[in-house]
Length: 190
Length: 322
Image (tube, rainbow over the protein chains, first blue to last red):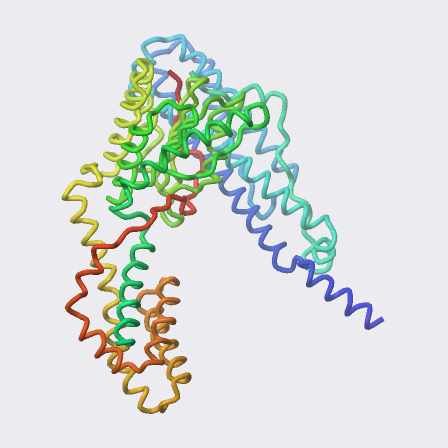
Protein backbone atom coordinates (compact mmCIF):
# COMPACT_ATOMS: atom_id res chain seq x y z
CA UNK A 1 0.00 0.00 0.00
CA UNK A 2 2.78 2.35 0.94
CA UNK A 3 4.56 1.52 -2.27
CA UNK A 4 1.44 2.22 -4.28
CA UNK A 5 1.04 5.65 -2.69
CA UNK A 6 4.66 6.39 -3.33
CA UNK A 7 4.34 5.39 -6.97
CA UNK A 8 1.19 7.45 -7.36
CA UNK A 9 2.82 10.41 -5.69
CA UNK A 10 5.88 10.37 -7.92
CA UNK A 11 3.66 9.90 -10.97
CA UNK A 12 1.73 12.98 -9.97
CA UNK A 13 4.89 14.99 -9.56
CA UNK A 14 6.38 13.86 -12.84
CA UNK A 15 3.24 14.59 -14.85
CA UNK A 16 2.90 18.02 -13.28
CA UNK A 17 0.40 17.56 -10.50
CA UNK A 18 -1.23 20.98 -10.84
CA UNK A 19 -0.44 22.23 -7.35
CA UNK A 20 1.15 25.23 -9.02
CA UNK A 21 -0.53 25.34 -12.39
CA UNK A 22 -4.14 25.27 -11.13
CA UNK A 23 -3.86 28.44 -9.00
CA UNK A 24 -1.84 30.05 -11.76
CA UNK A 25 -4.54 29.28 -14.30
CA UNK A 26 -7.13 30.57 -11.86
CA UNK A 27 -5.30 33.87 -11.53
CA UNK A 28 -4.98 34.08 -15.28
CA UNK A 29 -8.72 33.63 -15.76
CA UNK A 30 -9.39 36.34 -13.18
CA UNK A 31 -7.01 38.73 -14.93
CA UNK A 32 -8.53 38.02 -18.32
CA UNK A 33 -12.01 38.57 -16.92
CA UNK A 34 -10.95 41.87 -15.40
CA UNK A 35 -9.72 42.91 -18.83
CA UNK A 36 -13.04 41.95 -20.42
CA UNK A 37 -14.96 44.07 -17.91
CA UNK A 38 -12.48 46.88 -18.31
CA UNK A 39 -13.02 47.04 -22.06
CA UNK A 40 -16.80 46.91 -21.71
CA UNK A 41 -16.58 49.74 -19.23
CA UNK A 42 -14.47 51.68 -21.69
CA UNK A 43 -17.25 51.32 -24.23
CA UNK A 44 -19.86 52.43 -21.71
CA UNK A 45 -17.76 55.50 -20.92
CA UNK A 46 -17.89 56.58 -24.55
CA UNK A 47 -21.69 56.52 -24.64
CA UNK A 48 -22.60 59.83 -22.90
CA UNK A 49 -20.35 61.84 -25.23
CA UNK A 50 -21.61 59.98 -28.25
CA UNK A 51 -25.24 60.57 -27.29
CA UNK A 52 -24.57 64.28 -26.70
CA UNK A 53 -22.94 64.64 -30.09
CA UNK A 54 -25.66 62.81 -32.00
CA UNK A 55 -28.36 64.67 -30.09
CA UNK A 56 -27.16 67.96 -31.51
CA UNK A 57 -27.92 66.81 -35.04
CA UNK A 58 -30.72 64.30 -34.70
CA UNK A 59 -33.18 65.68 -32.19
CA UNK A 60 -36.08 63.70 -33.61
CA UNK A 61 -34.37 60.37 -32.93
CA UNK A 62 -35.31 60.56 -29.28
CA UNK A 63 -36.38 56.92 -29.10
CA UNK A 64 -33.04 55.54 -30.24
CA UNK A 65 -31.14 57.90 -27.98
CA UNK A 66 -33.08 57.03 -24.83
CA UNK A 67 -32.74 53.38 -25.68
CA UNK A 68 -28.97 53.75 -25.70
CA UNK A 69 -28.96 55.69 -22.44
CA UNK A 70 -31.13 53.09 -20.71
CA UNK A 71 -29.10 50.19 -22.04
CA UNK A 72 -25.95 51.88 -20.80
CA UNK A 73 -27.41 52.44 -17.35
CA UNK A 74 -28.34 48.77 -17.12
CA UNK A 75 -25.02 47.57 -18.45
CA UNK A 76 -22.99 49.59 -15.97
CA UNK A 77 -25.00 48.16 -13.09
CA UNK A 78 -24.11 44.57 -13.91
CA UNK A 79 -20.60 43.74 -12.85
CA UNK A 80 -19.18 40.34 -12.06
CA UNK A 81 -16.55 39.87 -9.39
CA UNK A 82 -13.70 37.83 -10.88
CA UNK A 83 -13.72 35.63 -7.79
CA UNK A 84 -17.38 34.68 -8.22
CA UNK A 85 -17.54 33.88 -11.89
CA UNK A 86 -20.57 31.66 -12.30
CA UNK A 87 -22.66 30.89 -15.38
CA UNK A 88 -25.73 32.84 -14.21
CA UNK A 89 -23.76 36.01 -13.46
CA UNK A 90 -21.88 35.77 -16.72
CA UNK A 91 -25.10 35.34 -18.66
CA UNK A 92 -26.65 38.35 -17.00
CA UNK A 93 -23.58 40.41 -17.75
CA UNK A 94 -23.51 39.28 -21.33
CA UNK A 95 -27.19 40.05 -21.80
CA UNK A 96 -26.85 43.58 -20.48
CA UNK A 97 -23.77 44.28 -22.62
CA UNK A 98 -25.41 42.69 -25.65
CA UNK A 99 -28.37 45.06 -25.32
CA UNK A 100 -26.05 48.04 -25.13
CA UNK A 101 -24.17 46.76 -28.17
CA UNK A 102 -27.37 46.46 -30.16
CA UNK A 103 -28.63 49.88 -29.09
CA UNK A 104 -25.28 51.40 -30.08
CA UNK A 105 -25.43 49.66 -33.43
CA UNK A 106 -28.84 51.17 -34.09
CA UNK A 107 -27.62 54.59 -33.01
CA UNK A 108 -24.76 54.46 -35.50
CA UNK A 109 -27.15 53.42 -38.27
CA UNK A 110 -29.40 56.35 -37.38
CA UNK A 111 -26.45 58.73 -37.34
CA UNK A 112 -25.62 57.58 -40.85
CA UNK A 113 -28.80 59.26 -42.08
CA UNK A 114 -27.55 62.69 -41.04
CA UNK A 115 -24.74 63.79 -43.37
CA UNK A 116 -23.85 66.73 -41.11
CA UNK A 117 -22.83 64.41 -38.30
CA UNK A 118 -20.19 62.80 -40.44
CA UNK A 119 -18.37 66.08 -40.85
CA UNK A 120 -18.30 66.66 -37.10
CA UNK A 121 -14.75 66.04 -35.84
CA UNK A 122 -15.97 65.08 -32.41
CA UNK A 123 -18.28 62.46 -33.84
CA UNK A 124 -15.58 61.03 -36.09
CA UNK A 125 -13.22 60.77 -33.15
CA UNK A 126 -15.85 59.03 -31.02
CA UNK A 127 -16.66 56.72 -33.87
CA UNK A 128 -13.07 55.56 -34.27
CA UNK A 129 -12.78 55.14 -30.51
CA UNK A 130 -15.92 53.03 -30.51
CA UNK A 131 -14.59 50.88 -33.33
CA UNK A 132 -11.31 50.42 -31.50
CA UNK A 133 -13.09 49.51 -28.31
CA UNK A 134 -15.33 46.96 -30.00
CA UNK A 135 -12.18 45.36 -31.35
CA UNK A 136 -10.58 45.38 -27.91
CA UNK A 137 -13.68 43.72 -26.49
CA UNK A 138 -13.50 40.99 -29.11
CA UNK A 139 -9.86 40.33 -28.27
CA UNK A 140 -10.37 40.46 -24.51
CA UNK A 141 -13.22 37.97 -24.86
CA UNK A 142 -11.18 35.61 -26.99
CA UNK A 143 -8.33 35.73 -24.48
CA UNK A 144 -10.78 35.03 -21.67
CA UNK A 145 -12.21 32.08 -23.59
CA UNK A 146 -8.75 30.63 -24.17
CA UNK A 147 -7.77 31.13 -20.56
CA UNK A 148 -10.94 29.46 -19.28
CA UNK A 149 -10.42 26.56 -21.62
CA UNK A 150 -6.98 25.99 -20.17
CA UNK A 151 -8.28 26.26 -16.61
CA UNK A 152 -11.17 23.91 -17.26
CA UNK A 153 -8.82 21.36 -18.75
CA UNK A 154 -6.71 21.49 -15.63
CA UNK A 155 -9.61 20.94 -13.25
CA UNK A 156 -11.34 18.23 -15.27
CA UNK A 157 -8.59 16.19 -16.93
CA UNK A 158 -6.44 13.58 -15.20
CA UNK A 159 -4.10 13.88 -13.33
CA UNK A 160 -4.52 17.51 -12.36
CA UNK A 161 -8.23 17.00 -11.62
CA UNK A 162 -7.20 14.79 -8.68
CA UNK A 163 -5.10 17.58 -7.25
CA UNK A 164 -8.00 19.94 -7.70
CA UNK A 165 -10.37 17.60 -5.90
CA UNK A 166 -7.95 17.12 -3.02
CA UNK A 167 -6.61 20.65 -2.54
CA UNK A 168 -8.60 23.33 -4.29
CA UNK A 169 -12.10 22.19 -5.23
CA UNK A 170 -12.47 24.74 -7.98
CA UNK A 171 -15.49 24.48 -10.26
CA UNK A 172 -15.27 24.83 -14.00
CA UNK A 173 -15.33 28.48 -15.09
CA UNK A 174 -18.20 29.64 -17.29
CA UNK A 175 -17.60 30.30 -20.97
CA UNK A 176 -19.14 32.97 -23.15
CA UNK A 177 -22.11 31.68 -25.08
CA UNK A 178 -22.34 33.33 -28.46
CA UNK A 179 -26.00 34.20 -28.82
CA UNK A 180 -27.54 34.44 -32.29
CA UNK A 181 -28.25 38.18 -31.95
CA UNK A 182 -24.67 38.79 -30.96
CA UNK A 183 -23.23 37.33 -34.11
CA UNK A 184 -25.09 39.77 -36.32
CA UNK A 185 -24.67 42.93 -34.21
CA UNK A 186 -22.26 45.20 -32.95
CA UNK A 187 -20.29 45.72 -36.12
CA UNK A 188 -20.00 49.50 -36.15
CA UNK A 189 -17.95 50.08 -39.25
CA UNK A 190 -18.86 52.49 -42.02
CA UNK B 1 55.05 37.30 -27.31
CA UNK B 2 52.45 34.66 -26.68
CA UNK B 3 50.92 36.79 -23.98
CA UNK B 4 50.70 39.64 -26.40
CA UNK B 5 48.83 37.56 -28.92
CA UNK B 6 46.39 36.27 -26.32
CA UNK B 7 45.70 39.72 -24.95
CA UNK B 8 45.18 41.29 -28.37
CA UNK B 9 42.90 38.42 -29.27
CA UNK B 10 40.81 38.99 -26.16
CA UNK B 11 40.65 42.69 -26.78
CA UNK B 12 39.51 42.36 -30.34
CA UNK B 13 37.05 39.68 -29.36
CA UNK B 14 35.52 41.83 -26.69
CA UNK B 15 35.20 44.70 -29.13
CA UNK B 16 33.45 42.56 -31.68
CA UNK B 17 31.26 41.07 -29.02
CA UNK B 18 30.16 44.58 -28.11
CA UNK B 19 28.99 44.94 -31.62
CA UNK B 20 27.12 41.67 -31.70
CA UNK B 21 25.11 42.59 -28.68
CA UNK B 22 23.63 45.65 -30.33
CA UNK B 23 20.27 45.19 -32.01
CA UNK B 24 21.63 46.59 -35.23
CA UNK B 25 24.67 48.59 -36.17
CA UNK B 26 25.42 51.40 -38.55
CA UNK B 27 27.65 49.49 -40.86
CA UNK B 28 25.30 46.64 -41.61
CA UNK B 29 22.69 48.92 -43.11
CA UNK B 30 24.10 48.58 -46.59
CA UNK B 31 24.59 44.88 -46.19
CA UNK B 32 21.11 44.12 -44.93
CA UNK B 33 19.48 45.78 -47.92
CA UNK B 34 20.54 43.19 -50.52
CA UNK B 35 19.54 40.45 -48.10
CA UNK B 36 16.02 41.76 -48.18
CA UNK B 37 16.07 41.67 -51.96
CA UNK B 38 16.79 37.99 -51.91
CA UNK B 39 14.18 37.16 -49.33
CA UNK B 40 11.31 38.80 -51.19
CA UNK B 41 10.86 36.38 -54.11
CA UNK B 42 11.33 33.40 -51.82
CA UNK B 43 8.59 34.55 -49.52
CA UNK B 44 6.10 35.42 -52.22
CA UNK B 45 6.47 32.03 -53.84
CA UNK B 46 5.89 30.23 -50.56
CA UNK B 47 2.74 32.27 -50.07
CA UNK B 48 1.35 31.29 -53.44
CA UNK B 49 1.97 27.76 -52.41
CA UNK B 50 -0.08 28.14 -49.27
CA UNK B 51 -2.82 30.32 -50.69
CA UNK B 52 -5.40 27.58 -50.89
CA UNK B 53 -4.58 26.37 -47.40
CA UNK B 54 -4.78 28.75 -44.46
CA UNK B 55 -3.63 32.33 -44.12
CA UNK B 56 -0.20 31.88 -42.60
CA UNK B 57 1.92 34.34 -40.71
CA UNK B 58 5.34 34.80 -42.33
CA UNK B 59 8.56 34.64 -40.38
CA UNK B 60 9.77 37.96 -39.09
CA UNK B 61 12.86 38.79 -41.11
CA UNK B 62 12.91 42.55 -41.56
CA UNK B 63 10.92 45.68 -40.70
CA UNK B 64 9.20 45.58 -44.08
CA UNK B 65 7.72 42.33 -45.33
CA UNK B 66 6.03 42.65 -48.70
CA UNK B 67 4.39 39.48 -49.92
CA UNK B 68 2.36 41.23 -52.59
CA UNK B 69 5.38 42.77 -54.34
CA UNK B 70 3.96 46.26 -54.12
CA UNK B 71 7.20 47.91 -53.10
CA UNK B 72 10.50 47.70 -54.93
CA UNK B 73 13.47 46.34 -52.98
CA UNK B 74 14.88 49.85 -52.91
CA UNK B 75 11.66 51.30 -51.44
CA UNK B 76 11.62 48.55 -48.85
CA UNK B 77 15.18 49.36 -47.85
CA UNK B 78 14.31 53.04 -47.46
CA UNK B 79 11.30 52.25 -45.27
CA UNK B 80 13.27 49.72 -43.22
CA UNK B 81 15.97 52.28 -42.62
CA UNK B 82 13.44 54.84 -41.47
CA UNK B 83 11.81 52.34 -39.13
CA UNK B 84 15.15 51.53 -37.56
CA UNK B 85 16.03 55.17 -37.08
CA UNK B 86 12.66 55.90 -35.47
CA UNK B 87 13.34 53.04 -33.08
CA UNK B 88 16.85 54.30 -32.39
CA UNK B 89 15.43 57.71 -31.42
CA UNK B 90 13.34 56.12 -28.67
CA UNK B 91 10.31 55.81 -30.91
CA UNK B 92 8.20 52.68 -31.20
CA UNK B 93 9.15 49.54 -33.08
CA UNK B 94 7.14 49.66 -36.29
CA UNK B 95 6.52 46.69 -38.55
CA UNK B 96 5.09 46.82 -42.05
CA UNK B 97 3.40 43.72 -43.43
CA UNK B 98 1.83 43.63 -46.87
CA UNK B 99 -0.13 40.55 -47.79
CA UNK B 100 -1.79 39.47 -51.00
CA UNK B 101 -5.20 38.47 -49.66
CA UNK B 102 -6.96 37.99 -46.33
CA UNK B 103 -8.79 34.92 -47.67
CA UNK B 104 -12.04 35.97 -46.07
CA UNK B 105 -10.63 36.67 -42.63
CA UNK B 106 -11.25 40.10 -41.15
CA UNK B 107 -8.21 42.36 -41.06
CA UNK B 108 -8.56 42.87 -37.30
CA UNK B 109 -8.56 39.13 -36.72
CA UNK B 110 -5.46 38.50 -38.79
CA UNK B 111 -3.72 41.58 -37.42
CA UNK B 112 -4.00 40.50 -33.79
CA UNK B 113 -2.79 37.01 -34.70
CA UNK B 114 0.28 38.56 -36.30
CA UNK B 115 0.76 40.80 -33.27
CA UNK B 116 0.55 37.88 -30.86
CA UNK B 117 3.03 35.86 -32.85
CA UNK B 118 5.62 38.52 -33.59
CA UNK B 119 5.35 40.47 -30.33
CA UNK B 120 6.70 43.63 -31.89
CA UNK B 121 7.93 46.15 -29.34
CA UNK B 122 9.61 45.84 -25.98
CA UNK B 123 7.94 43.73 -23.34
CA UNK B 124 8.04 46.37 -20.60
CA UNK B 125 6.97 49.22 -22.86
CA UNK B 126 4.51 47.47 -25.16
CA UNK B 127 5.63 49.92 -27.84
CA UNK B 128 5.01 48.00 -31.04
CA UNK B 129 3.09 49.20 -34.08
CA UNK B 130 2.04 46.91 -36.91
CA UNK B 131 0.93 48.38 -40.21
CA UNK B 132 -0.90 45.65 -42.06
CA UNK B 133 -2.10 46.01 -45.64
CA UNK B 134 -3.98 43.52 -47.77
CA UNK B 135 -3.63 44.25 -51.47
CA UNK B 136 -6.62 42.37 -52.87
CA UNK B 137 -9.00 43.39 -50.10
CA UNK B 138 -7.81 47.01 -50.36
CA UNK B 139 -7.73 47.19 -46.59
CA UNK B 140 -5.24 48.65 -44.16
CA UNK B 141 -4.92 48.48 -40.39
CA UNK B 142 -2.67 50.11 -37.82
CA UNK B 143 -2.36 47.83 -34.80
CA UNK B 144 -1.06 49.68 -31.75
CA UNK B 145 0.80 48.10 -28.83
CA UNK B 146 -0.91 48.25 -25.46
CA UNK B 147 1.74 50.47 -23.92
CA UNK B 148 1.42 53.31 -26.43
CA UNK B 149 -2.32 53.57 -26.90
CA UNK B 150 -2.07 56.94 -25.18
CA UNK B 151 0.43 58.39 -27.67
CA UNK B 152 -0.94 56.78 -30.80
CA UNK B 153 -4.65 56.77 -30.06
CA UNK B 154 -7.37 55.11 -32.08
CA UNK B 155 -8.27 58.55 -33.37
CA UNK B 156 -4.67 59.23 -34.47
CA UNK B 157 -4.52 55.89 -36.25
CA UNK B 158 -7.85 56.57 -37.89
CA UNK B 159 -6.62 59.93 -39.12
CA UNK B 160 -3.37 58.54 -40.46
CA UNK B 161 -5.37 56.00 -42.43
CA UNK B 162 -7.92 58.49 -43.74
CA UNK B 163 -5.56 61.37 -44.47
CA UNK B 164 -2.40 59.58 -45.58
CA UNK B 165 -2.95 55.98 -46.59
CA UNK B 166 -6.32 56.27 -48.34
CA UNK B 167 -5.54 59.22 -50.66
CA UNK B 168 -2.08 57.90 -51.56
CA UNK B 169 -3.19 54.33 -52.10
CA UNK B 170 -6.09 55.43 -54.28
CA UNK B 171 -3.57 56.97 -56.64
CA UNK B 172 -1.32 53.94 -56.47
CA UNK B 173 1.40 55.75 -54.51
CA UNK B 174 2.08 52.93 -52.11
CA UNK B 175 5.59 53.92 -51.15
CA UNK B 176 4.62 57.54 -50.46
CA UNK B 177 1.72 56.36 -48.34
CA UNK B 178 3.90 54.19 -46.14
CA UNK B 179 6.70 56.74 -46.02
CA UNK B 180 4.45 59.61 -44.91
CA UNK B 181 2.64 57.37 -42.45
CA UNK B 182 5.95 56.49 -40.80
CA UNK B 183 6.68 60.22 -40.42
CA UNK B 184 3.24 60.78 -38.95
CA UNK B 185 3.64 57.94 -36.45
CA UNK B 186 7.10 59.18 -35.50
CA UNK B 187 5.73 62.66 -34.85
CA UNK B 188 3.20 61.26 -32.38
CA UNK B 189 6.21 60.18 -30.34
CA UNK B 190 8.11 63.44 -30.74
CA UNK B 191 10.67 61.75 -32.95
CA UNK B 192 11.20 64.75 -35.16
CA UNK B 193 14.56 63.87 -36.60
CA UNK B 194 13.70 60.96 -38.82
CA UNK B 195 16.92 61.43 -40.69
CA UNK B 196 18.59 58.76 -42.82
CA UNK B 197 20.68 56.28 -40.89
CA UNK B 198 23.94 57.17 -42.65
CA UNK B 199 23.74 60.88 -41.96
CA UNK B 200 26.41 62.43 -39.81
CA UNK B 201 24.12 63.35 -36.93
CA UNK B 202 22.79 59.82 -36.60
CA UNK B 203 26.29 58.35 -36.62
CA UNK B 204 27.37 60.66 -33.85
CA UNK B 205 24.44 59.63 -31.68
CA UNK B 206 25.18 55.94 -32.27
CA UNK B 207 28.83 56.47 -31.42
CA UNK B 208 27.85 58.13 -28.16
CA UNK B 209 25.58 55.22 -27.26
CA UNK B 210 28.37 52.80 -27.91
CA UNK B 211 30.78 54.82 -25.80
CA UNK B 212 28.31 54.84 -22.93
CA UNK B 213 28.00 51.10 -23.16
CA UNK B 214 31.76 50.63 -23.10
CA UNK B 215 32.03 52.96 -20.12
CA UNK B 216 29.78 50.74 -18.04
CA UNK B 217 32.42 48.01 -18.38
CA UNK B 218 35.29 50.21 -17.28
CA UNK B 219 34.58 50.42 -13.54
CA UNK B 220 34.25 46.67 -12.88
CA UNK B 221 37.41 46.07 -14.92
CA UNK B 222 39.35 48.63 -12.85
CA UNK B 223 38.14 47.04 -9.62
CA UNK B 224 39.14 43.67 -10.98
CA UNK B 225 42.67 44.71 -11.90
CA UNK B 226 43.19 46.48 -8.58
CA UNK B 227 41.96 43.69 -6.34
CA UNK B 228 42.70 40.54 -8.27
CA UNK B 229 46.51 40.82 -7.97
CA UNK B 230 46.01 41.16 -4.19
CA UNK B 231 43.77 38.14 -4.14
CA UNK B 232 46.25 36.06 -6.12
CA UNK B 233 48.85 36.72 -3.42
CA UNK B 234 46.68 34.85 -0.94
CA UNK B 235 45.60 31.94 -3.07
CA UNK B 236 49.05 30.99 -4.22
CA UNK B 237 50.45 30.12 -7.60
CA UNK B 238 48.29 27.18 -8.62
CA UNK B 239 47.07 28.36 -12.04
CA UNK B 240 43.85 26.38 -11.93
CA UNK B 241 42.70 27.82 -8.62
CA UNK B 242 43.73 31.26 -9.81
CA UNK B 243 41.77 30.81 -13.03
CA UNK B 244 38.63 29.75 -11.24
CA UNK B 245 38.99 32.63 -8.77
CA UNK B 246 39.54 35.12 -11.60
CA UNK B 247 36.62 33.79 -13.53
CA UNK B 248 34.22 33.99 -10.56
CA UNK B 249 35.46 37.38 -9.43
CA UNK B 250 35.19 39.11 -12.78
CA UNK B 251 31.92 37.44 -13.70
CA UNK B 252 30.54 38.51 -10.32
CA UNK B 253 31.64 42.10 -10.83
CA UNK B 254 30.12 42.26 -14.30
CA UNK B 255 26.97 40.73 -12.92
CA UNK B 256 26.76 43.49 -10.30
CA UNK B 257 27.60 46.38 -12.59
CA UNK B 258 26.31 45.40 -16.00
CA UNK B 259 24.04 42.43 -15.43
CA UNK B 260 23.86 41.35 -19.06
CA UNK B 261 24.24 37.58 -19.35
CA UNK B 262 26.34 37.90 -22.50
CA UNK B 263 28.95 40.03 -20.78
CA UNK B 264 28.91 37.82 -17.70
CA UNK B 265 29.85 34.78 -19.77
CA UNK B 266 32.49 36.80 -21.56
CA UNK B 267 33.83 38.00 -18.21
CA UNK B 268 34.00 34.43 -16.90
CA UNK B 269 36.14 33.37 -19.87
CA UNK B 270 38.24 36.52 -19.69
CA UNK B 271 38.77 36.13 -15.94
CA UNK B 272 39.77 32.50 -16.40
CA UNK B 273 42.46 33.35 -18.93
CA UNK B 274 43.79 36.20 -16.82
CA UNK B 275 43.89 33.92 -13.80
CA UNK B 276 45.88 31.41 -15.79
CA UNK B 277 48.51 33.82 -17.09
CA UNK B 278 48.49 36.04 -14.01
CA UNK B 279 46.93 39.52 -13.79
CA UNK B 280 50.21 41.44 -13.73
CA UNK B 281 51.59 39.63 -16.74
CA UNK B 282 48.38 40.40 -18.57
CA UNK B 283 48.42 44.08 -17.66
CA UNK B 284 51.96 44.45 -18.89
CA UNK B 285 51.08 42.77 -22.15
CA UNK B 286 48.12 45.08 -22.70
CA UNK B 287 50.12 48.19 -21.86
CA UNK B 288 52.89 47.30 -24.27
CA UNK B 289 50.41 46.79 -27.09
CA UNK B 290 48.22 49.72 -26.10
CA UNK B 291 49.45 51.93 -28.91
CA UNK B 292 47.77 49.72 -31.46
CA UNK B 293 44.34 49.79 -29.89
CA UNK B 294 42.89 52.22 -32.42
CA UNK B 295 43.26 49.56 -35.03
CA UNK B 296 40.48 47.38 -33.68
CA UNK B 297 37.80 50.02 -33.96
CA UNK B 298 37.76 49.89 -37.75
CA UNK B 299 36.72 46.31 -38.22
CA UNK B 300 33.42 46.39 -36.39
CA UNK B 301 30.59 44.88 -38.32
CA UNK B 302 28.00 42.27 -37.72
CA UNK B 303 24.70 40.99 -39.01
CA UNK B 304 21.83 43.09 -37.66
CA UNK B 305 18.91 40.97 -36.58
CA UNK B 306 15.30 42.04 -36.53
CA UNK B 307 12.86 40.54 -34.11
CA UNK B 308 10.09 41.35 -31.72
CA UNK B 309 10.83 41.99 -28.07
CA UNK B 310 7.74 40.54 -26.41
CA UNK B 311 5.49 43.56 -26.89
CA UNK B 312 1.84 43.04 -25.98
CA UNK B 313 -1.20 44.12 -27.97
CA UNK B 314 -4.80 44.40 -26.87
CA UNK B 315 -6.46 45.57 -30.05
CA UNK B 316 -5.86 49.32 -30.18
CA UNK B 317 -5.59 51.12 -33.49
CA UNK B 318 -7.84 51.56 -36.49
CA UNK B 319 -8.72 50.00 -39.81
CA UNK B 320 -9.81 51.40 -43.13
CA UNK B 321 -10.12 50.65 -46.81
CA UNK B 322 -9.30 52.58 -49.95
